[in-house]
Amino acid sequence: MLTSAINYTKKNKGIPVYQQLANYFKQEIKQGHLQAQDKLPSIRKLSADLNLSRTTIETAYNILVSEGYLISRPQSGYQVCSLLMTINAEKSPTHLIKKIPHNSIRYNFSNNYIDSSTFDSALWRRCLNKTLHDPASITGYGEAQGEFALRKTLAQYSYTARGVICTPEQIVVGAGIQSLLAILLNLLPLQEKSVALEVPGFPQAEQAFTDHGWSVKTFDVASINSDLPRLLLVSPSNPYKGQALSADERRNLLSWSALNDGYILEDDYNGEFRYFSRPVASLQGMANGERIIYLGSFSRSLIPSLRISYMVLPLNLLSAYYASAKLYNQTSSTIEQLALAEFIAQGHLQRHVKKLRKLYSKKNDLLRAALLKNFGEKITILDYASGLHLRVSLHCPYAASKIASKALEKGVKIIPVLTKTHNFPEILLSFAGIAACDIEAGVLALKSALED
Image 1 (tube, rainbow, N blue to C red):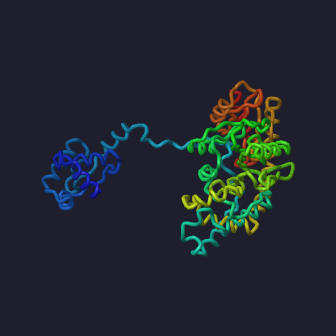
Image 2 (image 1 turned 45 degrees about the vertical axis):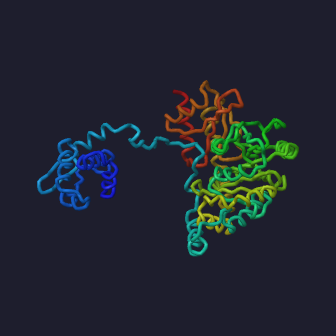
Image 3 (image 1 turned 180 degrees about the vertical axis):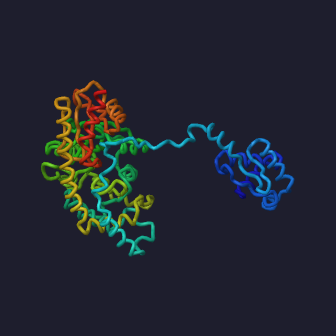
């Protein structure tokens, strides 16, 4: 406070010093830096600290007392007035008032969290501890491309689990898909900055593209043609609609990239979670790594707060990447990268995903049964064979956004599908985070919302 007072009086030379000092304390009180009943320095102490006369300090204090900012108490000195603080709080602008957290969601069918009981924190802590016992590996900023130990492990794991064909040198690690896209968009040898996203789109990716000056449109994988931009973003193993692309659709995408000199961004989001057949191998593996940029993450297979994603670049983009790699700092924690490498190398991730697949298959069954039981013919379950959500069509007169709004009033959070492919509104219901014992009650609450 002392330094601020000195600086304040130095930059307001056209105003008497006592008035400057009074104005400074008024500002501190209004901004909440001085609270009710806080004591101010004595006249003698402040005079010595600011190298000002006692008369100047006393005059400033008297102004504050007369205007109701301070009260003077015998033997106690000067204090901030409690009454004034109450009045100021009542008159505070609304934008300064902290928002009350929204804790009214009882049944969360959104896809931005997972069931905390699924994550073995003891195993993760063990991997972290092992990393921390090697100080030499964590005392720098880390490798811009990502720690080699993690990239080597990811190359092996992604081939075994997803059929991705790559070397550690092709992998770039980052904290989320958006940070990786920021790197990628400067590498692509495309004259036109335009991208098409699989219907209905991917808001976070769209933001990254538009921030870099790219135009964004959507397309349907069922109608691939030469008029599309030369960059497509798809999720072939588990698209938004909850169903893997067919073999013909995959072949059409690969043919399109070869014939049109285009690139495909393969977002392998939740690709390991299929319930009625084995997971479909990556598109990147089918193309032998050519013209496919593979994107993987651990937000669902582990926990969303582990901000580690990775990108597999085709060989023809590596020289461009290495030329600019030194311009980018690593955005993901070195400690967590090395812990993840250990977690995967010890086989923990493979066992964890196997356990999750069983749990999510059970929740998938429970949610479908609850919907059919309570909605009957008023609902059509469109897709449920993969991923962590069901896509359903509700036979009601409301738009999807209105359904989401009415559901929220009943404490149910759902995801509206804004691009409609059927005659009725569509919504997504994720079962990743909600407890199995709450699924039936959540569906009943959703039904109640639509009946009001």
